[in-house]
Length: 225
Length: 225
Image (cartoon, rainbow over all chains, first blue to last red):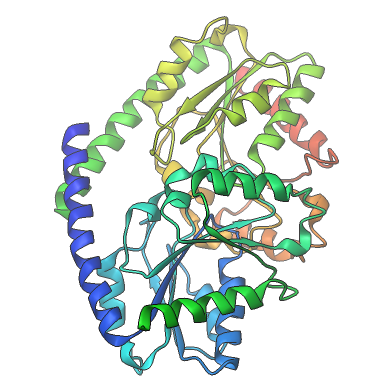
C-alpha cells in the first residue's frame, strides 16, 4: 500500500509542477512578482503580511493577497484592513495550498487581474511540512520563523528552509521575554540554507520592515531587466 | 486520482485504527496511562513535557516518553534531562506519528516495559493537521496552544481541538507582551469542544502545573477502578 501511495503522490506532485509552471509563465507575462509565505501556525504571517501590504501601498505599489486556511475567513478579513484586494481559500482539511487552487482563485477573482498588479502575496496554510512540496509558481518562497518557536526549527524542518529564497524572523519585539538566542537561530538557518537573505522584523513595532520592502523592490526590478 | 487517494487514505486510517486498538488493549493490560501531545511546532511541547516528567518523578511516578520529529534527536536529548527514559522517533518527512511507529518503538525499547510504567507520554510531530487523524491508542489526547499563536487557532484547526480530551495553554509568563486575549482563547476552545478541561501553564515559571499533575493522577485512578 505504501508503494501505491508513493506512486500516487509522485503523480500528484508531477501534475502540480505542470500547473505551477503554467502559473509561473502567466506571472512573468503579467509582470507580477509572486511570493509564497510559509510557516508554522502562529508565527505571525498574517500580521507581517498586513503590514507589508500597507507599506507597499503607501509606496504606491499595486498589491493583492490570497490566503489559505483549513477553515474560517478570519485572515482574509484581517488582511483586507490593509485596503488591498484579498481572497480567502479554504482547503477544508488539506494542509497546504496547491497550484490548482491558486489558478482557480486567480481566474475567478472579481476586480483583480494579474497584469494590474506589482506584487501578489500568497499566505499558505500554517504548516512546516506539507507546503514545502507544492510549488505555486511563486518567484520567491519565504520561510517565516518567530522568536517564540525555538531556534532549531530550521534543522527539524529542513525541506522548507532548504527550498526558501528568503527567511523572515518575526516578533523580535518579544525576543527578550522569549529568551530568543539570535546567533543560534541565524546559524541554524545558514546551516540549512547557506547565504539565504534573512530579515528580522516586528509587525507590532514596524522594526526591520525597511530592508524587507527594499528587497522586494530590488527583486522586482531585477526580474524586469 | 483524487478518488483513489481518498480510498487509499481510508484504508491506511482503517489499518491504523486496528493497530491503535491493539495498543489500547496492551496499555490497559499494563495499567499505564498514555497521553498524546499535539500542537503546532514551537508551542513549547518539549519544555512542558520535560517539566511534567520531572514533577511526576518527584511525586514518585514511573514515567517514560516517546518523541516524534521529522529529523534530529534534539527533543529526546532535552527530555532525557528529566531523568526519564526517552526514545526519539524520526519520521523522515511524515507529518505525524502512527500506531505502527509507536508499537515498533515500544517493542524494541531497551530497559522499558509498559507494565513497569504509570504514565507514557507521546510527543507528536509539531503539526496541527496531520496528527489529528491518527489514533495512537492513547487514553488522553492533549491539544496545546501557546499565548504567542493567536486565539483563533481552535477555530482554524477544529479537528484537533474537537478530538482532544484536554487543552493546555502554554507560555502564560509572556501573555502580556504577546497581548494574549485569554477570554477569547477560552471562548474559542469551548466553542469547538464544550466543557473540555483547560490548563494554563508556564514551563518557565512552573505556573499552573499543580492542577495539571492532579488531573493526571485523577485520570489514572479513575481508569484503574
